[in-house]
Image 1 (cartoon, rainbow, N blue to C red):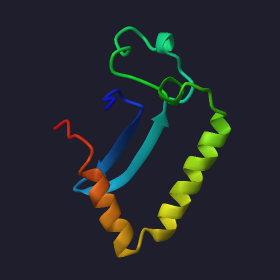
Image 2: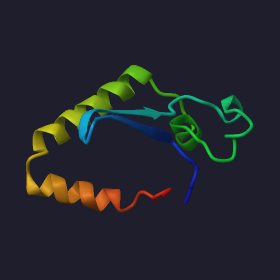
Image 3: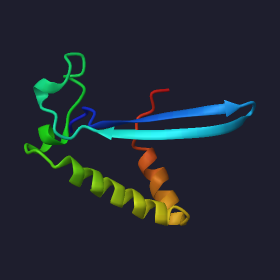
Length: 97
């Protein structure tokens, strides 16, 4: 099993007193990077779709697919099944804290 990182999630939030003012969540996916294109400090811990699947990808097609899947999840967000699936998947993510 390859333990290198394919992408990442960035979360930022702001508090106004004791209440949340806003939260911003963003993510990135390493799509067409080659082994040599990663900085030396990331070479052993990062990978890309291209490295894993040995072919390049159209980044717009990847983005369209991701957005399509997010829209489907958004539509199902209120259902108990979607919440249960999210919780199950979140248990697979190692916690850094």
